[in-house]
Image 1 (cartoon, rainbow, N blue to C red):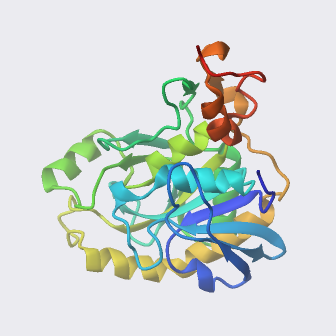
Image 2: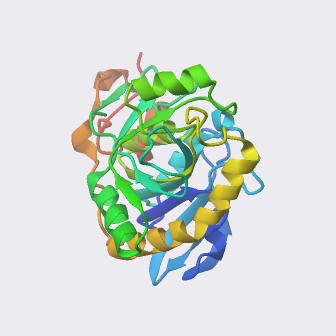
Length: 295
């Protein structure tokens, strides 16, 4: 049963718990058909707006990027009634103008991951979704406006290249990605964006540039220590931007990336009742009313 806890969700890492204005009310474990989400969902309010927060890698950074339970995470947000999802993440910059400590709101993704399950579709419930514009333009604009209002250097638009990790790029890879015109590089967001679109959840990310990867001759190559230091120095700006964007997002606003971009292809008489029960929360408006077990 879907419970209307929040229409706004946030997925990210450490730092949000201490965000000024975030009043924590509860923490809950959400069961899903895809296993446990990364962590318990932290439920609370930001300036009177209900928000559901999830630590992508679990508190303490437990999961490497390819082992994050992405399907369980997005399914969990859907069960909580979330229709608008803000993501906060660390990235490496692949453009000179995107300096460390700057922020980026990507509007495109290139997915170079291998072997990750990035769909809820399965035999007997095949759903195709449009991904030409993978970011919710309304949520992206809210982040951009918030960044400018907070006097943060923020770049609106650009392409996020998603790799498996947890290793950073080789120098040859970094130069190759630059030649492709990529803007930033990360390890998580493309997978989240695909699943959020399938679930009919609007998605946008606030990407914090922590380094120049390893392509820039005049800057140190990325290391875990360098990335984490710059990440922690950017947290305060990210908190303020996020807080302002949440305040500007109507709590009852439906997703702008809903059913129009999704289509169930499987014939109605081939959609098993057991699959309908599991997937109804994701595809409730797409599944046939009288689905049955195929003979």
